[in-house]
Image 1: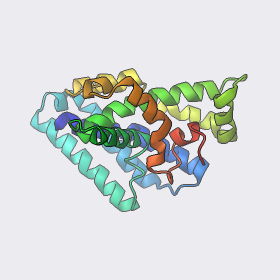
Image 2 (image 1 turned 90 degrees about the vertical axis):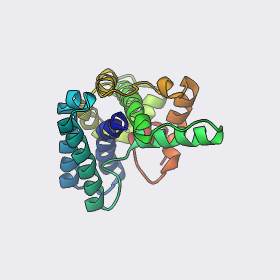
Image 3 (image 1 turned 30 degrees about the vertical axis):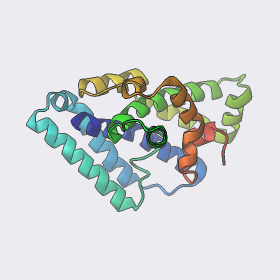
Length: 214
């Protein structure tokens, strides 16, 4: 449960990224105070990951406080944008597939943590391809959708750890780092990257823009 709670907090890396994209490209409402509140709670968790992984009282207190602050931030804004982006859409997609096939469920935060790393890697690949001068095919289409905001959005990747760092943090916290460790195979991961944005079609995540949907 502790590792899953930490995984859910790590998901704020990609949810905050997606929220900025949704505001810049899709006109979604954005609250800098709520975003800062969430980012501070996330940073506190990451700074204390060893204590959380060791299950010390201070570590558990830090994680609990961060989860509460994240929840309060959502209440202040009135929606879940600050804490739920494409990583949550992947998690929910996996959950529905496990239900559909009658398989044992996995803790929500464990799925979110693993999905956060998947999304971070996916975004780096796609934004890198879209930024290439000779981008073609789907990457060129993404560049067109992002327009003159592409360099700015690509720059936000500096605030997003790469997949290897996210997985390292998950391991330090004592949780699974890869989807396959949760029983989520490569085919399901690939399918979720193509389809999971349809779970919340009203959200303008980068995943939705990558998949070419309005």
